[in-house]
View 1 (cartoon, rainbow, N blue to C red):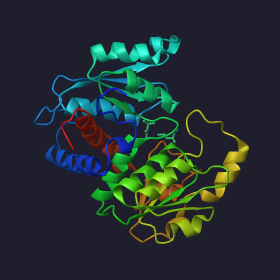
View 2 (view 1 turned 60 degrees about the vertical axis):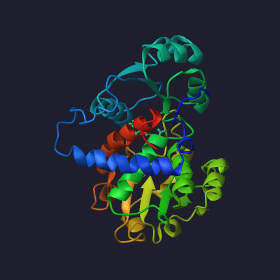
View 3 (view 1 turned 135 degrees about the horizontal axis):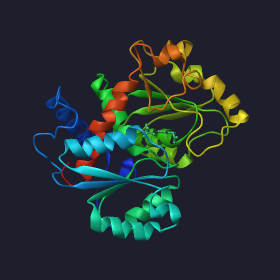
Length: 311
Ligand code: CP
Ligand code: NVA
């Protein structure tokens, strides 16, 4: 891999840098309160820098938050989507990496196979950021941790309960658990467990991880309740999977088992009525739109870390 600060997974930064990112995000968010969203921060920290964003999958939050993040840091961004770039016609990742490195200062990629993001980082001469792969979604989790801290919950010892599919978002939560010293209870049906590698990573970092099929037990006394779509981008929407997921819906009868001040998080987009009931999604414990807004503030600190300006 080229000798740049790539952010393909949370471990690339490590716990201290993630803590620094969250601190910086809180400071920057506070300093620009009430400002127009496109006005640059006072320090123009990434003045003149350009971020290219490659999208081989759909996005609303990641796309808009990285663009606005670059504007707020004094830089700019551009988008290459697979249907209208030469990547979609078979140009190699290696050549794309080398060309973009001559034209822009950093690259974000959202794709299916994580190996593509790794290959891009290998050939790029600028920082590469994982904007979601089938394996992980590290940028999302920086925003999630920021949201949890902003809601007055310190991370060490926090009990985070996950419900549903053992997917890319859960993988990054598990990775974060080992780095930031919180615990994870994952209530997932048989056959949809997260990769063992991420459970081992969390445990190696000192986190307690409980994998269970008992949703009620996972929710008991939890500080944070999290779920995500039952069918991620690129997956088949099968009757079997939906049937297996149904007992893991986050609804009010599950929420009441958690601590009374527990937060509900969802990276969005949500399928209200499937993985979460309308009552919980729209309810007082739901922080999903704070979480979405925090994607901007988190992306800024991830970008600053990649450019060696943080952590
Ligand atoms: N949460 C998230 O990554 O949203 P998008 O798919 O809209 O980018
Ligand atoms: N697990 C979801 C997250 C979307 C932001 C997916 O990969 O589609």
